[in-house]
Image (cartoon, rainbow, N blue to C red):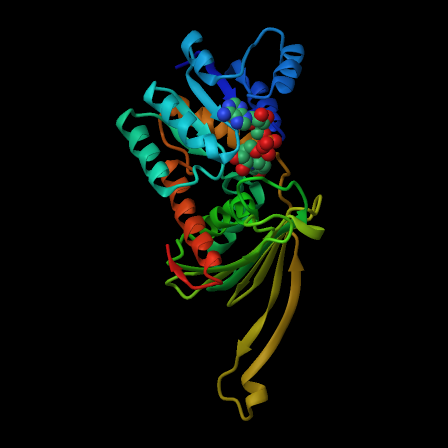
Length: 337
Ligand SMILES: NC(=O)c1ccc[n+]([C@@H]2O[C@H](COP(=O)([O-])OP(=O)(O)OC[C@H]3O[C@@H](n4cnc5c(N)ncnc54)[C@H](O)[C@@H]3O)[C@@H](O)[C@H]2O)c1
């Protein structure tokens, strides 16, 4: 297929605008229609894009235009319905994270995409982030040794959501990033959290993922925090690493720090010796991860090869989110995922 991919986008809010900017700038994409239920947003879009069809209901665009692919950036409660109708009509679909709110809905979408031979991609952006891709190479090369544990912090004073809590809003990024880096899915999860500002919508969550390999991962998410932090720390048997996405340039640091276990020691103090070596800051070409993600969707449409963040990947993340949410409602009782 050499023609441009004809794309419509449903939901052009805070994040949707970024998706639209990126998809519009890709040479092999033609954005032909936009849908948003807000009249104010429709008005703005009509002014900004006078040549595009703008509608309040995505069905109007699907009925009247020749659409190849649908990008969904509405609040998560609508993802399932819009993705399902689009897949059923034979469209390729990009849906933002979290893929859906219920596991059964995500399972249905995966099945529908398979039956209709459609591309179903979930917006797990961290799996396309150049610093995360680079870190996976470091881990794979054995440079860090065995991974003992990792912890991720994603906090700021930010946009409060009405339906999904801070776990659902932020943790999809960390869960997808950590499982991508470790190439392993957690088998159990324990989470705690609390709702301070509004009833039943947790503003903060502390999630622990347990892996069969013995690795533990901890995730802290909050939209009620004085700091903006986007940081992942990885502690391995040979080296330690930190990814800091708020840092403008030096986003990865590899610390040659660890504890050596000595052979033939006389005292316990000699048995374990601390090692503090160099800190390496690899140069990573800073590219907008969202642009890479959008390019991957178009590549998948053209090649018919599913992207790494396909529906199954979205479903796997959702299983962890659901288990974490259930655990959080039971004050941290571990749940299988
Ligand atoms: N990948 C990322 O880093 C990232 C960052 C932020 C948000 N997101 C995800 O993007 C999605 C949208 O988040 P947002 O921050 O843009 O939310 P938002 O509330 O700012 O925007 C949502 C837009 O969808 C519109 N809308 C709601 N229901 C609709 C419907 N049924 N049909 C058409 N339009 C509808 C709203 O009018 C609004 O303009 C969410 O799934 C969110 O989790 C992803």
